[in-house]
Image (cartoon, rainbow, N blue to C red; front, side, top):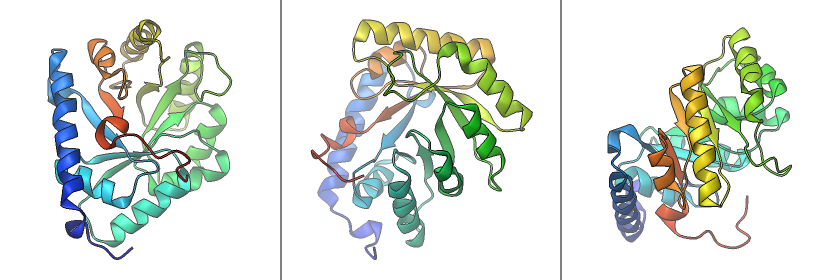
Length: 231
């Protein structure tokens, strides 16, 4: 891609800026301070123009779920000598892709198995990690059970890896989500971990109530993803 960020559609920047203002209003409505809740823009399946738009709107943290998409976007972004962004990998990890995650992401936010930690420890570039917790017990969900978090943290500490905190994707039911968010916040406090990443477009107010430090939003910034969007 040879297009510079400055030449991207100004209407997209305006739309994202307006959407970001709405998200910030939602955060403030919970009584939280904006400086205490990081907004992570989830740009999976969206274009590099959307990445440029969130940077123009004042955000500098970007999340991707698919390794190749992250590699492509970050490579193109860096090739443009564009402003620095912090890239978070949010998707389920495959051990054979961890080398790419370590090279192209700045944070891996979805670590859930000891064998993933072992592979991260062998990488030349050691990036901060978040441990993903799954409260649903559904096999299709990525994440470790909450009672497994201490074993994961101990494994990472033995390797000298930097575990910044915990993250979760909550149940769609808001009452269940509140219980899950509360449990994650308690676990972060008990383990003295700084980052508690929870809350997305539909449940960010609940997450803010329960003490999130980071919300991950895509649809609230960009609108609905196109059906069948490429990974």
